[in-house]
Length: 484
Image 1 (cartoon, helix red, strand yellow):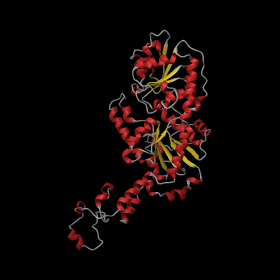
Image 2 (spheres, helix red, strand yellow):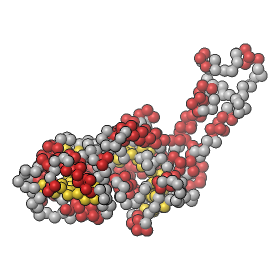
Image 3 (cartoon, rainbow, N blue to C red):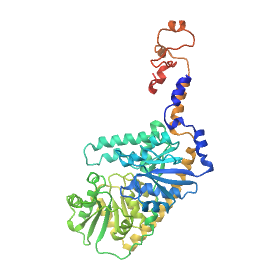
Image 4 (cartoon, rainbow, N blue to C red):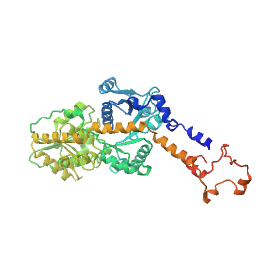
């Protein structure tokens, strides 16, 4: 039995590193700052909402007096490093590993890098942590941003549903291995609580609802009325996401307003560079007139995005499903009126904010979206902007970055003092192996030879396996461990 326990303890994983060893090597987290490292593909936001959330999370965590924050990424510029440093965040570039995609370079931290918690994101930036933990004694925080199965129902490429299911399974397995699961917004928190019931983690999913983005909070909106009412829809305009993001709904809704006495115009921002014509043709297929449409390519500049919010009258997010909906929240952060889909995390959060439900459209019908857009326009621009500013303030009262990050820090401090998920699982396995009880009649037939032969053999001896290791008393209990 002791030989088996030695074999288990020799498994190369963080489970073989005791909490005492961790504290003796790095000092207890109660006597120093909590060292947190976030995995990221970039510091800016050229790759979508995940990068935006990651950057903002790093900035907000760094404001906590008990936390030291670093971001580990494949590449960054000196300008990125200076920008991060201005928020007390350190950027660390990974060593290049030829033959591997850049995100996989993050599977190995610098040897001298001390860390208590590593924050991964989804499958793309979470799978690396299971490797990091084998070398660095740390806790794994896994952040989920999407529900892949639900997205697969609206993706336009082949095998979208089966690929969504595979991504879903990968996300769930990563969450099961992590020490803490964090979901972006209430919609995903509820979804992953259901997915994790089988492993008993359903009550431990932490809801991290994004707050107002301070970088847009000081945007000055002009108050004069314009003849043409400009409606913004923006995001990454890839063909595969066209239906998912409801871009067809937006085009049809503006087309419905074609004969209104006052003109409406759709500004679509997010076409892949060089593919603006293709995006234009896709939108024109849904009845919108050329005179009602402007298409622009995706622009990664946050300064340009702030200017864009000043150019339009309304931002809409007609997604058929959305894990959260950062694009609309960024627009609201700039004091711009918004309309969002009810089947989104942001739609759910707005229901909890005074007057927030007025901005939620519970429909995929373009006529309902057209009516909602008309209702916004009926109000004078000064009133629209005043109401948007009030809603921005109400939202900030209910959903604060500081409050949510403080709860996350409290959770990280708590788990940093206890065993990791791997250590808990190993403890359970060891308990099963060590627990001896009288074998049942159905177990007796598993012994090698008859009872008579066992009694005639030397007391204390057990048959040997092919590797000369004594066969455990109850081999059935060890089959799942690959020991028999």
